[in-house]
Structures are given as structure tokens and as C-alpha cells.
Length: 567
Image (cartoon, rainbow, N blue to C red; front, top):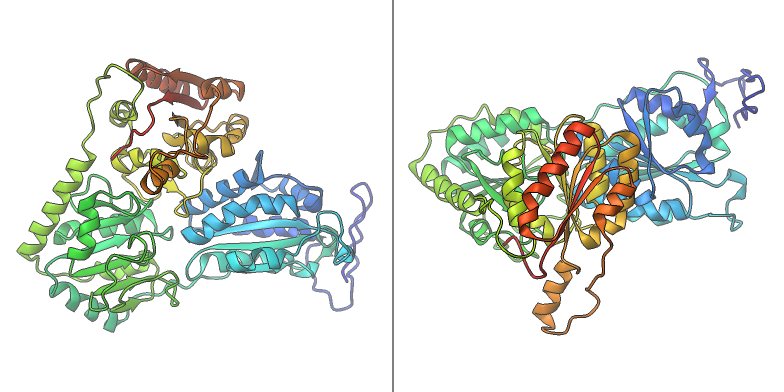
């Protein structure tokens, strides 16, 4: 067993714990963890503090890593998940044992289903207290093992840096996802020796010569090819390269549900999103296309409308993913290419094909459908209650090309799907597991990671109150998102299902809401309430001025009619 570090005011005993202990700098295991995170390029960590990992918190003080203190573990986990979507390294969250770990689980499930690299550090009870029903004791592996790529516990302090390297590697390699690291309180204070473990290189795969010829032959023989982009494992450069290649060959691309922006909104090759609530033309094209090339994702539940669309074994589907197991896949697999998106695109750009007239006609037809679907409604207000159509029609013309939109789950998100111009990779951050409460935490993370960019979040009234308290975090750290709360006084998506299956029998879906604008003001931001449509343009303009001139977050509370939808 390694040495236990003395109290801070005492001198550090640098004597190795054993004759075989490695030489090198001496620090606590908790400090070694922070050192390793910095070595991996981590810029910030999202935490709710606990006495179980105080030594890690102490290590963060002089580390250069920003410690963002959140108001709920679910909010911290969502922020880390959103951070993982925006970077080519895992997002980092830290919470304490028992209740803290339970609260963070929602963000872990989001990272699992969204294939987001994320590491959740969980403080644990002291080593000697295990299996004695100690205060807040729980079995970290039993809780998380089915929803994380790996669950590790730091039982040997000398492995602190190694455990971080393994966690970061596991979260990023293959199909990205969450990793959980348990940190026993007493082990964190043990002295460790030796240099930090370097980052472990992540394999990126790539196309073999056989892969290239198979894809070339399939494309050349196709009349109506379609690419579907998805996942969180892209780079902006790869997204741009793919867009240029598609446009040059007059080939269309659709976006997996809630991942819009890989191919820009205004690209002549972009034909819209595929997922729940999709417009009918993009639903139909899955059956009509004679070659589907999935890049960064697979034809799973949401894309195939509950494992219904394109399930014929004769269909031609090429799947490009670093996951050799194809977890979540349904339907035929004609060919699998094991590669990360950026490496696949690098190899794809070497394939030059003669443009077939059918490709141009097919792409132009679908692009025309998308342009009609995304055309903005009139910006002029109409008599009556506030409308999201009016809000979006006034907002979109003000947005810079690098604007970011975030949202959680609910029918209110469809206004963003339909109208928000996602022009870059990672300009749409959402929860593909349908998790409510994601909007505010993800907007805070996006604003901190992308200072100076316009970050907009679209929150439903039910969803907002699940993590709206993270506006306090926004105020504390200077995040400046524009928040629109769509208040229809109900859980709208569930009401829609309810009316479909139990028409006229409304139960468990109706809400009575506070004044969200006053809440925003109480948290230290700008808040304005719009009940009439005629008030919407001025409310939006005032909110944008508050962000740009006063440098605070701003919230617009839209009180809208029930049963009004984007499409």
C-alpha cells in the first residue's frame, strides 16, 4: 500500500512506499488524476462537489482546468455530455457517491445512446468501509456496468494516471461512449510516484483497397444513392470535405435525427433530417433510395421508425462505423467499412465518379422538398397568442453562420429541426435518447466552449423546470445563451400520443407554470414574457440586446396555444 498523504499543513513524506516504487515526482493520487486530465487536453470539468473526492478538487485549483460548479448532478452530466459532442476528447463530469451518482445517471444514458465520449468520475466511500452499509455506499459496477463502455475503480493509487488514460481511451475508441471511474476517498490521498501516463492513441481505421472498390462499384451502379450522416465522431474539416465531394457528384445527404449540421443546412446536397416527426418526403426516401451509405451511425430504431422502414434483406446498405459489432443496427448489411468518419472521408475523396443525370435529378428533387419544408413563415405577427413561427421567422435572419442550437425532448424541438440553419458540424446539440432537461445544461456548456458565438436553446415548459436551475451556473461563469421557453402548459408530446390512443381523455399531461421571465431575472439574467404575437419581435430584440450589450444570458417566455406544432 502506498503512503497516505499527511494533512496539508504537514510536510509531505517523499519516502517511497515500497522498495520497488517507481521514481519520479511525488503527489497525491487525486492530484495525479488532474495532472493526467490536463495532459489529455481537458479544458474544463463539470462538478457537483462531495467530500468523497476533495483531493481531486484540491488538485484542480492550480491545474489550469476550469472547474464549473453545477447545481445538480444531472445538469453536470449533461454539460459534460454536450462538451464531449463538441470536442474530439471526452467531456468530464465529477460527482459524489450514492445520491450524486444516481442523479448523474441520466447524462450517462444520453452519452450511451448518443455515442458521446464522456468520463464520469464518482467519489466513493473509503476502501475499508466497503460492504458494511456505509453512508452513501453503493456498488458502482452494478449500477453502471450495463450503460457504460467500462467501469473502473481506483483501488491502487499508483495507477491513478494510468486509469485516466485508460478511461479517456475507452471513451473515445471504437463507438464512442461513457466511461465511469470510481474514486475511493482514502485512496485519493495516497502518495504516488513516477511520471504521468501518456495518452493512448485511438485507432481510426480506414478503407482498404477492397473497401474502395466495393463502394466505387456500388455508387457507380446506383441510380438514387443517399448518404446519411450521424454520430458525434466527426471533425469540422471532414464535414466540409464530405460536403464538397457530395456537391461535386450531385449526391444527396440526410442527417440522423438531432445531428444536423454535418452537411450544411444551405448545401444543395442537404435533404433534411431523418428521425421521429420527420417530414414525409425524407421518410419516403429511405425506401426509394437504391443505395444507403451510413457514415458515423447505423440504421437503428429512430431512423427506421421503430425497425419498420427498409427492413428488406435485399436492400443495399453500406455502414461506415468504428464499431465492428454494429450495435443498434437493423435491416440489411451489404458491406461494412470500419473507419471513423474523418478517415473514411479522406479516403472517399479519392473516389472520382462520372456524375449520372439521375443523381442530379434525384438530388434536386429532394433538395427542393427540403427547401420548401424549411422556408420561414411570415415574420409579421398575427392577432392572438404568441407563436413560435413568428419567433423563428424573426430570429433566423439575425443568426451568424456559426450559430449553435441546443434542445432536449418534446414537440417544441421541431421548430429547431425545421427552421434553424445549422451550418457547421456540432452546431446542433441534443439528446437522441429523448431525454428531457438537456436544453439549459447543453446551452451553458456550448456557450462556455464557444465564447462569442450565438447559442440558442429551445426549451419546453415541462423540460425547462427539470434543469432550469443551471441558469445560475450560466450567470456564475458568464455563459450567454438565448433561451426561448415554449409554454403550452402541457407535456405536449405525451398529450399527442394520448390523443392518438385515448382521444379526449387527458390525464397526467397538464401543467401550471410560473413566470419564467421572472425566474431568469432572479438567476441574474434578462427575462421577458410574450403572451401576444405582436409582442414577439420586440421581446426577441430586447433579449438579443441584453446578450450583446450587457453580456448576460437572456430568456424569452413565449405563452403559446396548446396543440400548435411546427409540422
